[in-house]
Amino acid sequence: MHTIAFRSPDPLDHVCRALDTSRKMGFHLASLRVDGEVDGGFRISIALGAHDLLTMETLVERVSTCIGVYDLTCAFDGVCVRY
Image (cartoon, rainbow, N blue to C red; front, side, top):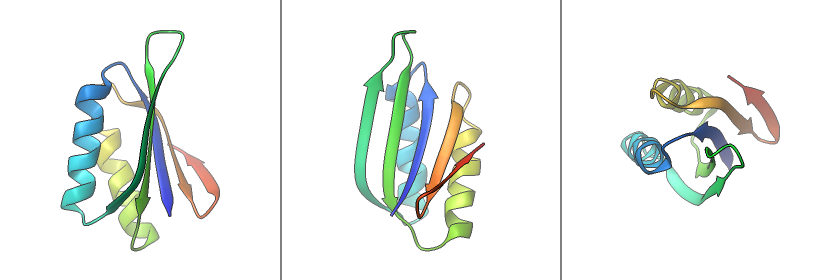
């Protein structure tokens, strides 16, 4: 299980984009969490069943290109990487 997390001012747009990209790449959704923050932004956390590290890195690269996504992190088998 791997987790990608990021901040967004527009979760309705960015969650849909991240989930659609995940689906197209063949991932399986394990959990999704969206939390509001005091600054008005949101923290999105998506846990996915992943096939290998390279595929997860590709997903992270694709999600990071969404305008407005920031503070992106990814946990690979318990090791957190910040992008």
